[in-house]
Structures are given as C-alpha cells and as structure tokens.
Image (cartoon, rainbow, N blue to C red; front, side, top):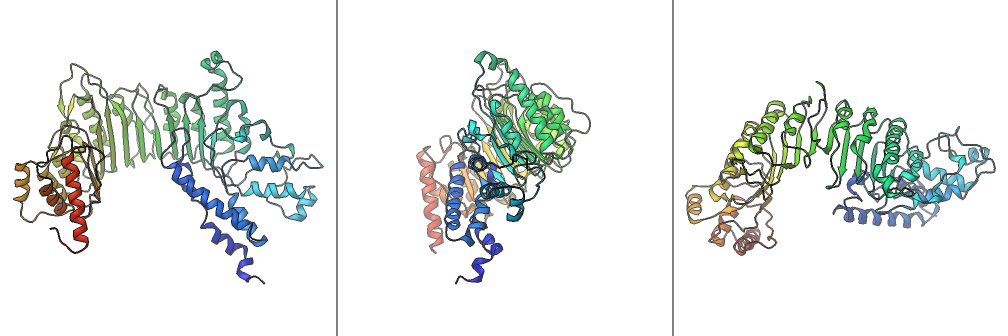
Length: 545
C-alpha cells in the first residue's frame, strides 16, 4: 500500500517542479548566432526532461504531475499535432464553445474520444515552445491542425514562443498565438522562400507583405506581449512598423547579420511612441530621426549598433530620449572615420552628461574604423571628459580596436577614471599601447573600494614605478576585486621583475582569482604563476612570503 503522500497530486507536482528547467532562461539560446552558452543550457534541460519522463513511467499517480510538467516546456508541437490528427471526431463540429479543460464526462458529451481529450489536455498545459536549432518537423505538410480544434486558442496558457518563420507556412504561427503570450522570439532565416525564384526573392514583395501581415496579426492575437526579439538575415526593419500596436511591449531586440545594411529609420517612430518600452536593442539608422518631444518615456536600457551610422547621429538620437530612468547605454561598433571623431565623441559624452547624469550607471563604448587621414589625434580622456562629471557611473567599458588613430589613449586614463567614478564596480580599458602605471593601481584600490572587475590595457611595472609604489606607506588593499586581466596579455607591458610585481599585486588585490593568460608575454605569465603560489601559501597559513 503506497504512502498517502505519494498519491497527493499537489505534493508530487511541487517535488517534480525542481526538475524543471527555469523558463526565465528560455530565450538565451539563439539558433541564428549559435551562442556559446546554449549547449550548457540545453544539456541541463535535456537531463531534467529525461528524469521527468522516467518519473512519469513509475506509476499512474506519478504520471499526471510529471506529464503536466513535461508538456509545459516543449521544443515544438509536432508530437502534439500528431496526437490531435490521430484522433478525428465522429462529429466535425468545432470545439469553439469549450474554453476550459474538460473532465471525462464533459468530453463524452462533446463526442471527444479519449485520445483527443488527452491531446487537448496536453495542449492546455503548454507554456513554452523553445524551438529547434534546425528546421522543425512542425514546418512539414503533416503539421496541419484538424478542423475540430479551430475556433479557440489551441495553447491557452502559452507564454513563451520561439519560432523560425517560413513564409510558405506562415499560418502555422498564427494558429499558435494566444492572448496569454508574453515573450516571442521570431527567427527569419536567410534562405529564400521555397517555391519562389531567386529573382523574385531579390525583389522581396511576397516576403514583405507576409511579414507586415504577420506583425499585424501578432498585435491582434497577442495584445499583452511584453518581450519581442527578432533575429533576421533577410527581413528588413521597415516591415515591422506595426510593432507600434503592441501597447504593452517592454523589451524589443532586433538582431541582424553583420553584412545586412540598416533601414531602421521607419521603425524608430513607432517604437518611440510605446509608453511602456523599457529595453531596446537595434541598429542605428544612418540619418537622424525626428521622434517628437515625448519619445521613449520609459526607456531603461539601450543598445545601439552604429555599424552603418556616422558617429554624429548618436548624440542626435540620444537627445530625443525623454526618459529620466536610462541606466544602461551601449554604443557598439561606432565608426571613427570622419575628420573629427574626437569632437563627435565629446558631443556624445556631453549629451549623456546633460540628459542622463543622475540615472546612468552602465556605459559600454566600442570604437572601430580606420580614422580619416587628416584627423588630428586627440586624447581619449579629453573626448570623454563630460563623463568625468557623472560620479554615479559604476560600470564603464571602453573598447578601442586597432585602426583608430585619431583618438589616443593615455597612461593616465586609469587614474582619471578612478578619481571620477569612485562607485565603480567594473572598469574595462581594452586598447593597446597605453599600459597603466603600477602606482595608479594603488590609487584605484584606495578610491574604488567596491571594484570587482578590472581590465587594464597593460601594466607598467618598471623600476621607477616599483619604487614609487613601495614608497607608499601602508597601501590600501582592494578586498572586493575578483578579476584583474591585461588586454595586451603582457605583450606591451613592462615587467622586468615578475616576482616583485607579484608581491605588490598580491598586497593590493588579495582576493583576485588569477588566471594564466593564453599566450602573451612570458614575464606576465610568470607573474601570474607567482601570484597563484602566494595566494595558495596564504590560504594554508604561510603568509605572503
């Protein structure tokens, strides 16, 4: 006789829920970009589902709660469609009047056979469709729903959906949409639509009409949508103007392949009018938008890809934002190709200071491109000087790639930033030919007590810098710093005495988890090895040696 606890559905359901993968991470896997973290996430999900499947086969009492959780998160709905198609009704009357899961007696009254009833109960449990890496079986001709299921949402509890859009089979997605949907990730593959010649595909009128119709239907059938992510290698941004009808949208991300040009301008105004939009990621248009006085009133995080936009359009776009809550700004792939990139970057920083000084906490800047031949080189600190009047910045990452010669980094950059941002928790200076003096690391440890991650261009541990640091009486340690790396892996750094440098760094940053560099200069690798040895000795009571 089984214990009473093993027959309690609610208790078993709560236990089995611990085996389920968290739904909050469902959108971390993007098949179009093959994200590195996807393998680990998918492996955990597969192991959890395998365990749940084993539980469902133990006994009848285990089956119902385990099956409910198994059907709550699925890769696609092909198996569900197979079940529905295998159970045709004697009466082809649509099931429109049934809006709630029905018990066995009501199923019989509705002329539903047992297998159809079970298939519908599975459908009512589905909350997330994760999607496959490759073209799903759901896009085959056998996907078609039977007529008796029409007239109501097939998946009334669906909240998360990732779908690879096929223009030839577009109605499949529309049949899955439900008013309960909150998060949607649409993937538009680069391959031409089946059945359309390459010349017609280049003209793109069928795809454009389909995408515009699809977005309008999404706004009608899923009006409570909060999160929308579009990964596209062919669809243009201007086709998605109906997104402005999603009044409850809070997050919008548009990901495109690097080789695709930007046509984002027609999409900016509908997005700017969304009152609840908090998180936005898209490619910056090549011309300045005109968004009106109340554009983006609730924006909190903004990521702009400026690959195809001149740098002077960035401050023009930022100046149109009316939100007082912007806390994260990422400017990616900024092209320094004009005659005066330093002046344009200074204008960006000035707009940031004037509009977002009290709210902004994170700033990420990427500078690319071969500078104009007549551009006068200017110091990086001078271009970013308005940011030094924003003491609330806590996460600043500056990445300058080779080829940008009109903006010169300096050895004093780290010291100026530590003085300007005492609340910093992360500082990243990823550029070459400007190693930070060792004495400035002591200044960073003293001023930025909450710093947890630090990326330096390189390090200058010459004899003069070493003596300057050793002359400081009782240097302040930074116990919260957990990561310190060199962007140059020691190639441009000056490290004449690895052992002495290791003792200095161990004194200043006793809690860093040191990692050996991949390649790089041998002297820096020796320094890291000595740092690891010192830390191990300290952990086992040997002191700093």
